[in-house]
Image (cartoon, rainbow, N blue to C red):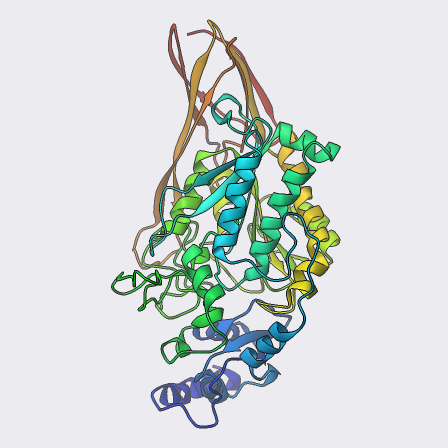
Length: 526
C-alpha cells in the first residue's frame, strides 16, 4: 500500500468521526461550490460516491456542490480544494435580482425559466394549433406524486403513426430536476421545428421523412419541486440537496403525498439517469446504492415510472437517434463512454455538434456512469445516442446569459441529429410488398440486457422485448426504418422476428439487417 493511500484511508477514519459529530460552527449553513484536486481514481471515486458533484470537472479536479455538513467531511479528507462560490444561494439571489430583459425566442418571448405548467400549456397549445404537425401525448405512467407526464410528436401527417415506418429522433431533458437550461433548449427546439415547418426548406423536408418525439420534462415531480423552491435550505434538505438544487425524482419512504401541494414530504429520491438497465448496479462509483446519494440508482433497474416511460418509447418506436439534455459541463458526450464498437461514428457526429456549440467532444463526463439513457438506447436498439451537458455557468444561470445567449447554436446542433436520423446510412431499412394487399406487420426481438457484475439484485441480466407494428400501404408495400438487428456489444448476429398478417394468411420470417443496409424482402406471399 502506498503512503498516499495509507494517508487517504486514515483520513477516511477521521471522516467517520466527523460524520458522527455535530456540525461545527465553522461549517457554513448554506451550500457552496468548490473544486477539489484529486490524485487518483480512488479519491475521485470516493468523492463521487459521498458528495454532490456537478459534472463540471477537468483533468485532476472535481467540482462539488457542498451542503451543510459537507465542508467538515471534506476537510477531514485532507484534500486540497478551492472555493469557487462561497454562498451559492446568495450568488443565485444576486443573479435573480438582475434586470431580466425580454428575449425574442422561438415560441413565446421570455425573460426567465419556465415552470412545469408553462411547458404543459405550450405543448397543448402547439398540438391544438397545428393538428397535422404536432401530436400531444401523455406517457402511460404518471409520476410518483400523481402528475401526468407530457410529450409531443412532430412530423408531417403526424397522426398517421401506424401507416409509415419513418425513422424517429428522440430528445428529452430533466432527468435531473435542477438542470433548468436543459429543458429550455429542448422546449425551444420544439417551437423552432413548428415555426420552421413550411418556411425552412431543409426542416420541412426532414419532417416529411422522419419524426421527432420530445419529452422536455422527464422528471416532473423533481423539476416542479426544484423550480418552486425558495432560495434557502431546509433542515431536512441539508444533507440531500433539497430545495432549488434537488436532483433526483421524489421517491419517498411512505409514498404519502401532501394533496394540497402535491409533494412527498419524506422524499429521498432516485436518480433516473442511473436507473436504466444497461450495466445497472455498478461497483465503480458511477452510481450509488445509498439512498441519500445524489446518484442513488434505485432498488432495481426500471424501478421508477420515469425510466419505464422512456424505455417503452425506445423499445416501442423506431428510435434511431437520441439526445438527452443535462447541465453543466459544456460537453457533448456519446454512448459507450468512448469505448463503443462504433465509437468512430459516434465521435464524428458528436464533433459536428460540439463544434457548433463550442463545447468539448468527449467520451465520458470524466468518470464511469452506468444505467444512463443514451447507453441504454444504444446498447438495446443501436440508436446513436448522445448526452449534451449544456453551459458552464451553473444549474440556474441568468436566463439571458445562458439561454438567451446560446439558443441559436443549440437549435443548429440539434438539427445535426435530425439529418443523422433521416439518413438511412446511419440506421437500417426493411422494405418489400405483401402480395394480396394491405397487411399488418409486427416486429419483435427478445433479449437480455446485461447488468453490472455484483449488482444488488444478484441477477446477471434483465429480459426485454422490442415490439413494433406497422400497417402497409393499401397495395401491400412498406418501408420500415429502424435500428440494426444486431445489438452493438453482442458478438453474434441477431435477428428480428417479422410477422406478416394479411387477408390471405400469416407468415413469420427471421430478418437480419445491419447498419446502413437497405434490405429488400421483395414480394412476400402469404
